[in-house]
Image 1: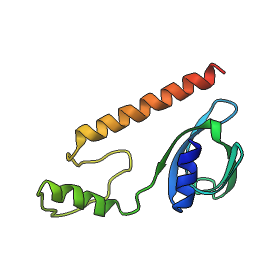
Image 2: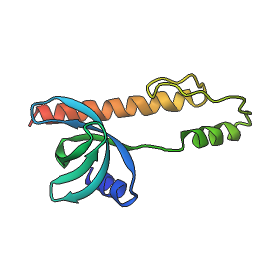
Image 3: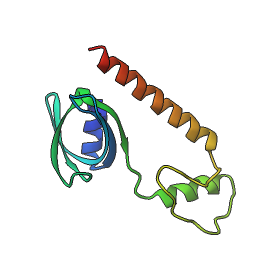
Image 4: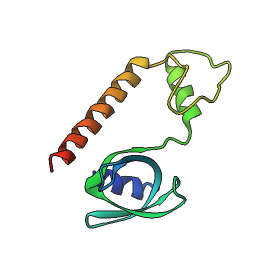
Length: 125
């Protein structure tokens, strides 16, 4: 996980992070990583609108945010020779696109499995 955090920091990326607090509560935050030192890292948290410090061991997942989602969608559709007539913004959790649904289901299941394994490992500590 440390490597992912350092990479996001070096690339100056904004990331979505799932984090488990000491009391076991899980939160999702949008962050920009400022520095990684020892077992901790400092971020600017867009959710709380403030700087925060987190423990690396309590991070469940970190996924970089793609700023140019429309460009990515256009490229994926262009590969399948699908002409774009209109793009509509939808919720970040739902999509009306049918392109690569199988890939999205696989990615969601893989993330779910990874988070479940991390939750179990933290509960067993």
